[in-house]
Image (cartoon, rainbow, N blue to C red; front, side, top):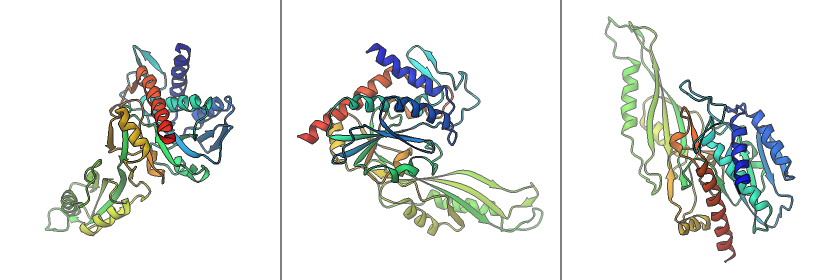
Length: 355
């Protein structure tokens, strides 16, 4: 058991040591492809995405997808440890991507390997995807068409092994309030900044009728604003960015249409791709988790679930509050405990399904 645990931690350390910022995951993808290829699985690759199945893949069985992402954000300047060196201190592993989502990656690889030696009632498919941190089109989204029909997925993200049964979608808006330029010494009621403020106040007061039991209300936040070139010139345009977190009661396009009708400025959606997701709480996997005492909740953060048009849950070792922070870390015990919980969950699910 100690040797097995050491191998799991070594794999995480190896991954941390390979820079894998979004769109630059090739080296870590190469490493993981070679690692899995030595296990004699059927392994496939699309750009920097890797997925594999067992050699005894049975087309008559249903399919469970195990997914996590191999990319990271860029390290901030405030790191005190070296971000690309796995620093083992006490029960912690420090390093960029250790928590988000290297711990989930090595845990789900271990779960996949665990069931390779057993006869189970489902096929397992392991997908290690790229570009998750930037919601890139060459990440998980690019391989969905290549996968067999998926019945449900477990998406590995740092949730403290709680099960997120719903996840908010993301809508980013570029808004442009227009006015009329002129010298500040002269009368001018067409200041674009003031017009932007009026629209921002409108955004603050927009109410959506449909609420979610797990995700609550849609959240609207103005996160960036840009206007003006000189202190003595009234700006004729003010650009501001709006972050909208959408619950599962609306598609992101529906949310956009409601917002666009209420503001008085040019409003452009960057994408309609990142819809919310939710699994039926009567789904057998969710019911199994409930019987095990696993906490069920709704997540405000997005993941590769936004690319999936089949039922999915999000759960993994680590804590989302450590994600994207300087000196990111994961507890070794979180990984080992997480693997046990994954396996117990699937064991119980397989038993419940047969029952």
